Length: 223
Image (cartoon, rainbow, N blue to C red; front, side, top):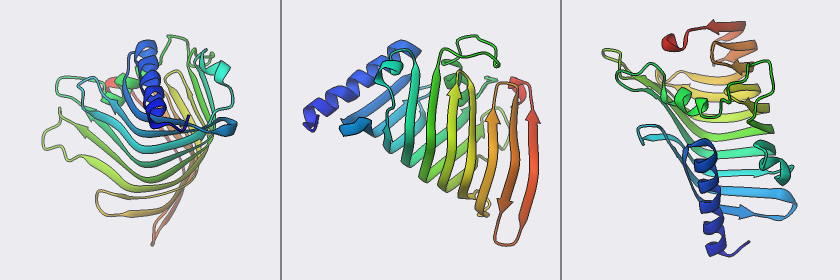
């Protein structure tokens, strides 16, 4: 498994599996399998439905609890460490759904949100280092993209069940596009097709502290 040629072949096999199973455009340059289920993925690219970059990560390191469950679309991981990553959430001209929503919909098997989904991804902990997230909409006049840079921190009990995402944000720090530095964000976060919630939220900057429960409900076209 330590031979570069074999690692490159494993990366291509993983890419082909994801493309065939979920119709998503993913490229993994190298897969390194170590002892005790440890896995490292290098140079991960996920392209959106316009072939632009949706997600990029230089390195993703994790451990797999069960290879058998992966075959059944149940991806159960231990800690996931994600380094030097980019997420671009763009709504293209004359489209209602943003690129991330279009991507997430590919994992939706049509079941109701309160029922088990065919696709499940879990991680005990998600460690983020040097992340960048941008949000833009080509349908808005004079749209200035919202972005967050230098994202670093941890979340616990990360879960993707079909199109639904949830995690316990333990501590995140980042700088937003007005150069406001968030020194600490913690929250119980949930995202679905119809609502997004931030329970037990704490937001701290150098000069302020906010405690709140925040709830957004929306139609997909208004998100």
